[in-house]
Structures are given as structure tokens and as C-alpha cells.
Image 1 (spheres, rainbow, N blue to C red):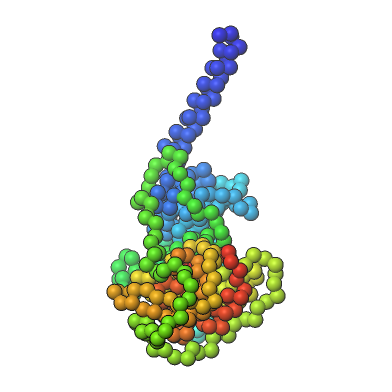
Image 2 (image 1 turned 90 degrees about the horizontal axis):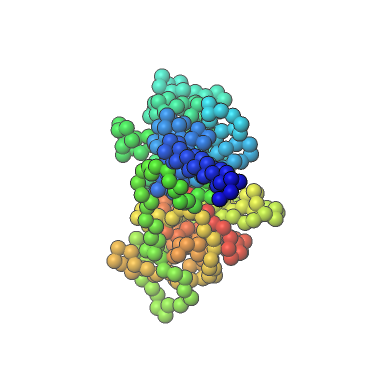
Length: 394
């Protein structure tokens, strides 16, 4: 071996050793991998240290995406929130993202102002937003970081459907707090809602799991894939019954549907991509072209035990009319002539509904599908081509 080749070989060994040392240092000293969500949390931006010192598992949850650059910021989405740091700034500039305000804006939520009342001793009034904060949200808010971590309230305490059922919630600039009345008086009475996940879904953030590059594992293993087969059969051709079918078990008494809630006339097309968002908390559906909302309507989604699954889907089958049937709790049911059916995930579909009129009331009556008023379903069917993206979120 010549002296030149020896020096080149030695230099290559030095470089490889250095790269190995960098990877080892990163894996050993500054990164966690969360098998449950399939993402890393590192101290490359100081996010891991912030997460550890701010009750990260309780207040932010696990990371659901890798850290990424966007609009001069490095951001990372978590189940319950988002961390961000301006580029070229220090770790002391890390802050929580405005997921509460941005989620409300994305779904066109409008919160009523605080009603006139006599000031109470155990409340805090925020002149900047015109809202009040009372127990038990007030104590949780103060103990968990207050204004710096959550921001001010942007709503009063209201009742909404959440992933845990119907609960009292209050929106803040950077979070949504949720109260479970069945746990009143316990440390788990108030928790931070999963708006980080919901907002990431609405914005199309890449949340697909990635493989660990050797970081220390944290938390439980990845959950099993959800089974939605029980929510209904695959779409099939309509077969008109030769005799009146039995009534659907547990259905509401058949009645003429009330007139649908006032709906905006379709706006002039913006030329943008079409998107349908089903918000399970509001029990409401929104249609967009690009960034412009062109339609909305009340809905009724899956009942307890047959909840409409969250996620991003697309319309893969359309049937103008269909007879639906299935078995629930050992009892067979048949519903003929269901109109304007659009399947999005296995047996889960958006469709018109004539057997009840409790849309947008919080009553979840379906076997997993998204029930719509007849006029709204007809409009949506005409407007939505095959492949239209549908996002279902809380």
C-alpha cells in the first residue's frame, strides 16, 4: 500500500468513526421514539427538554409527526398541541402553537360572548377576549402553565361531543380543556383535548409512522389497526324488497323530516380542490373548494360502540339509492331506499336519512355512517366527484 493510499484509508476511517459517534450521541443523549405514534422527539430544537419540563405526556401527549420547517418556524405536532420555535433562535424561544384558535378558525366556529352576570369570587375575566374562566378549568389552567402555555380563553365553557363522549369544554388560544363530569373531584376531571391531532388532520400534516433510527423507546407499543368491518357491509347493488321490510331496530319513530337547518347557497367555485370535513364534536359537516367554505349541514354520526372512525378518506363508491342491512346485537335490520350514498371507508358512508331528523343536536344514531338531511345529502352527492377527500375529526 502506498503512502497516499494509506493516508486516504486512514482519513476514511476517521470520518466513519465520527459519523458513528454522532449517531450514537444522538441516540443515547437526545432522542425518544414513541412506538404508539411512530415518531421521534429530539433535542435538536430543544423540544424534548421543553416536553420533559412541561408535563409533556399529560399536556401535549406523544408526537404525531416529525419536526419540520414551515414559514420561518420549526414545528412539531403532538396529540394535544404543537411546539414551535422561530428559526435561528434559542431554546428559550420555544412556545406552544395556537391550535385552539386555528382549529376554531378552520371549522368556522363562532363562540358567544360571556353573558351578563355578577362577578364571582372564583373567576378570572379576560378583557382582551371578553371571556371568563371558572373552576374547575381555572385551577387546571393556572397549575399547568396558564397564559404562557394555554393562552387566554376564546370561549365560555360549553358542551360538545368529544372522543370521550359529550363533555363540558372550554377553548383557549392554544388548547381545548375538557371536563368529564363522571370524574368530578378527581385529578382526571379536566384534561387537555387532542386538538393537535385534529388540526394536523385538517391541514394534511404527514403523520405516517416512521421507523426508529435507534432512539430510546418511550411509552406503549403501536396499537392494532382499527377494525371497521362491523360498521357495515361493502356497497352492493340495490334490490327492491317484494314486501315491506321490518322496521330498523332501535330506530327513532318514523316522521317527516324537519326542514334542514339554513344552509348557504353554494358559492361561486374558487377552482380549488374539493374537501369535506365532518366534525364529530359539532355534529356538523363542512364543504370547501380550496380555502373557501361553500356549504355546511348538520349530521348525526355513529352511536356508542359504533363510532364513526376518524381519519382522512376519499369517496370510493357512489350509489344514488341503496337498501342497507346488517345485524346489531343479534338483531337484523333493513333500511330500504337510502338515498345519495357515498362510501368513504369500508362500510362507512355519507348518505341521506329519512327515518329521523335529529341532525346537529348531538344525538348520534347511526351504525357508523354519517347521516345527513335529505336536501343536504342530495346537494353533496351532486357536488362531490369520486375521489373527493373526506376528513373526519373531533
